[in-house]
Image (cartoon, rainbow, N blue to C red; front, side, top):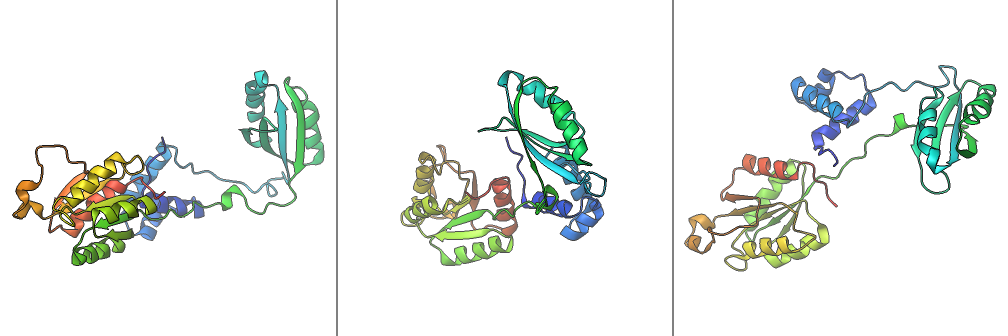
Length: 283
């Protein structure tokens, strides 16, 4: 199961990709957070094998300017033994199993054509199970793994469902200031239509809209829809302090993740949104 990463984790990784020697203090300064927070997160990312900090030497500078890509056809009964032998070879930089025409693919670095010839005629030729080898010299590297950077992940999309435009505007401002993408709808039916088109990460749902329990009906419809049933719901309503409080079914399962009574403190709302969207990304 993939490790759940939030935006802070991603920002730390991008900084370390730029300079793996950055200290925790420098990363914390760049992100505007404490060094202790950065240290704990980096330790967790390394412990969970999300990242590995290593040096990538310049092959030309260390005397191995000849880089060769190789693809091998191998007897399947021998493929593990061949792969282990090649992985142990100091010339091999990376090695992968492959599908399609070839069974193994690798990249190797050599100081000269003579060393490449010895690798082909001695090391590979001595391995039983190899049926064919194709090679391609790398003339110039346009982009290496060291030049690749983690792509930006779009922010979670939050759908606000409420027929009170003031609440929608206020909540939109709070969420957008925290970096979320915000959609809105004014009824349960409109919200369901928006969800099926836009696939929000989370829904903030009022109860009383077109009908007294419009939001409750929408939440039930979400839980019956295979494409929407896993979308977190924060139900935000003033029904508990209204004359209609007795109509809200408190003695049965309510298919929401959190219920908050209006008015809601922005900090509390952001706390719940962050908790429920952590590790989730828009489809």
